[in-house]
Amino acid sequence: MQGFLGNRSVKRGLTVAAMVVLVALVLFLAYQKNFGPKAFAQWTIDGIRGGSIYGLVGLGFVVIFSVTGVINFAQGEFVMLGAMFCATFYALDVPLPPPLKLVVAIILTVIIVTLVGVIFERATISPARARGAHIVTLIIITIGFTITVRAIALLLWGSRAKIVPAFTNLQQTDVIFRPLGLTLSAQSLWIWGTVAVVLAALYYFFERTMMGKAFRACAINPRAAELMGINPSRMSLLSFALAAAVGAVGGIVFGAATRPQYDMGLVFGLKGFVAAIMAGMVNPLGAVLGGLILGVAENVGAGVTGLYGYRDLIAFVILILILLFRPQGIIGGGERGVEQT
Amino acid sequence: MLLEVKDINTYYGNIHALKDVSLHVDNGEIVAVIGANGAGKTTLLNTISGVLHSRTGEIVFEGRPITKLSPDKVVHLGISQVPERRQVFSTLDVLDNLLLGAYLRHGREPKEEIQKDMDFVFEIFPILKDRQKQMGGTLSGGEQQMLALGRGLMAKPQLLLLDEPSLGLAPLLVREIFRVAGELREHGTTILLVEQNARAALRLADRGYVMETGNVVLEDTSKELLGDERVQEAYLGGSGS
Image (cartoon, rainbow over all chains, first blue to last red; front, side, top):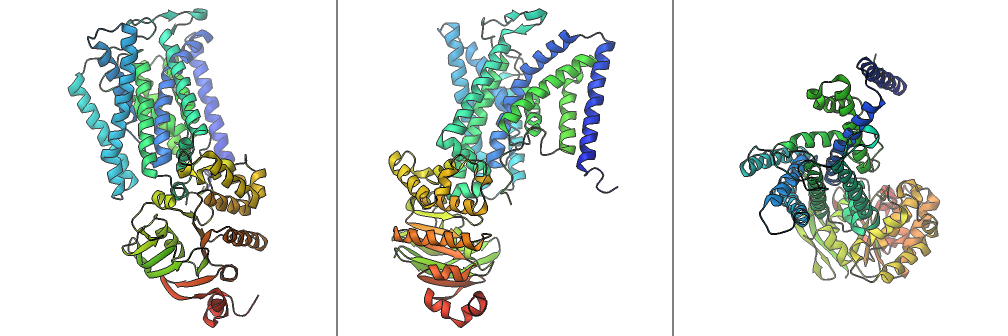
């Protein structure tokens, strides 16, 4: 028996068989309940919408993990803070025309949440690491921070849901388009546009700027990076700032499509983690793709079975399966690896 | 005197890796530190470059104590280390690897200065120019060593620390790397070289130190060391090869 599961071709065969069974099951259920291609298209659209935000959160996980080795479970809280701060600022009674007020609220929110990320790193992660804390300790610290932030959020904002207006009409109910009989909210377009802009900006930073290259160097080979005069502590700070900013942006655009609440960070944090795990924790584009796949999978799964209440279950089943069978991820390899000893 | 190391004691956890080690490097010299695996040679370089810190003792560079400085400060002062096993950035291209060698100079010095050093690196290692756009990890072992050396030079160091440049290279490539090191001395770069390949190192160097289990046990000119019976016995495999 030994080596049976280790055999590559057997493993691959099992994976393909499992996929075929899964697809067959989905199609069978759809056939039974008379769901056509249109239903699938709708689920996909809805899935890509939520999945984009999982992807952004996953991106935050990857950015921090690849440079520091820390899995930052507070990533979802940045999303929550983004949505909540934006809602709070927008609700303030100031003599500004609403569109301008929203823009100011967004800018202020991103700045504040980024600062939260910076303070978090400097006040907890950085001193702990300076004293030689084990990586597991640092991860536990992020969980502690999560609990703290959520408690403070409850104190500040209470348990009632807040409102971020839809960007297009600044109303609570968004503009809806009906292309080919499908339902598409205008905010979805804002979400996709934002994700595209964030990705382009990060791409420019990592590929075209010296600091971005230093950041990657630090992820590839921290020791050699240090010998180049790249300060790993500064790169760690930068990674938390970036991750917080990306999380906040995600929270703001998605907050406008939902009803943000003090505890929304939990679900986003965990799903973003699943997205990042799909990309082996080190591939930024893979994390975004992972988020999209996850979003579509849970919507199709919930739609086909009709069990909307169990939607989150799908994400966690995927998480467990990946951690069990392919802990290195399913989308692309990362930069880390070769010269790590 | 460019670099002076005075009685340093460095620990790895509880392991006493460097015991009262002292040495010095003068301007324009090549100094070799030879010794077996585990003698503390790499620890010595890491302590100089600030990756590790000694518990006692002092390191002085150009009259300035650098014992407690962090690596980025040490690089900024003009000491650049080419690490053991090359450690090139495998998924960045050759050009980016070299540019990162000059990381602390970007924005502080005019671009032309950095470009001038890049041209110099391409001049001594033309193969790197041909492979500019190739990923560091796809180069051969010898090319990676050239890249690591070139990257180290991009910091424009006054003192270059070379850690086992011959490791895992074919004899012909070892000769090539050591030839370039000799050429660098002509250009005014001072080199502290750490090597297990004692013969090649001592042939190149002006002076040498022999390390054993964290201690410096011998120091002399290379010529004397090459002729020394104990050195021949322990590190040169008896008489000539």
